[in-house]
Image (cartoon, rainbow, N blue to C red; front, side, top):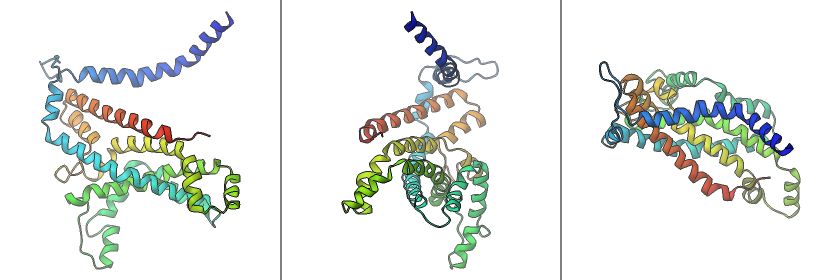
Length: 291
């Protein structure tokens, strides 16, 4: 009887969190999947079941493939660099250097700025002829360049903004992980004559793998949910060069009012994130050493 009461008590404790999770995560996902198999309701034309028509339209949609390609390049360009930069910054500010408190604050400041504010700041940097970047390059003798208005530089310009904002956020997790590593390990390695590079490669980095896995998952999610900077800085242009997948979903759903097609696009985005998450756990979990 006591065991049954403990079992009931445990489930009652979990019930509020499970209810919120089901209400705001599972139900919207299932409803979105159901909606993707129907047409969008119009005036005098109610929604009807259309099967895979929305997904067939997606396969034939060149803008969808362009947005997917842009998002993949965006992820490849931002995730490794932001994580590597975060780790380097964390190692630096973890050392006993003068003014490290101010340095930590400087690195973390971009993280607490609103996304829209960050986009407007960098929009001023990239402004042709008058922006801060243009003023600096002009003083070095370089010609003026429209960074956000040229296909070849628009997406890399957005990547720079994302790396600048996210590296400080990931640095906090690495810094906390570095401070949790026992200093006795470094002392023992020093006695054995191990170099700092060898100690980092064989001891520090393996112990940071749980944090790396967590940071990597967040970085992937951030790469595929980016929409604020695109809205403010480029609106997907020029010529769809910065059309990311979530921004295209926003356009289809709220500008073109095709909610069913937007639901189908959302399911593809969720599927991509699910596959990436499974691959991350499959390949990194076995290399992760938990303390």
